[in-house]
Image (cartoon, rainbow, N blue to C red):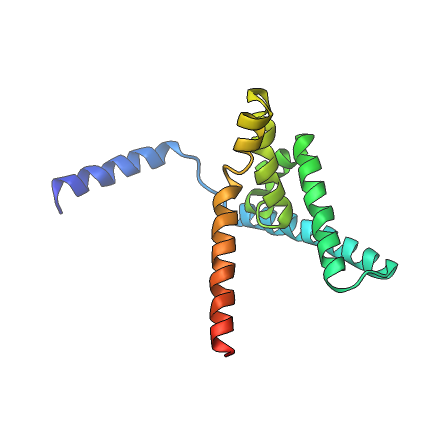
Length: 149
């Protein structure tokens, strides 16, 4: 063992002695419950809109728009941040978490102006997700197209 490895291990043990222990089961359970509840709300809207007569892509798009609206609305009122603090990844995974990641920087930087603050900072967190999602989707679509020739 080199002296550097020895010091790194000692330093990590020292830092870990100050950190509170993570309660993995409790945090995973909360994330599961909150993420499942958000998805259940989406499923409720889907059933209600299906009962109202919507079908196919119109139904899926409407449910997505409702969930994005609710996520943005709750972010604007400061509720979604409190949900995220208690639920962790359970609030990030569904579509409402994506709406939160777009709306939060926009709200935070509104004081810098509408163009350089709100509009420019809106996609700071979500921008890479959008870019990589579109790129991956295009790559998969091209691969699918090549395989079906």
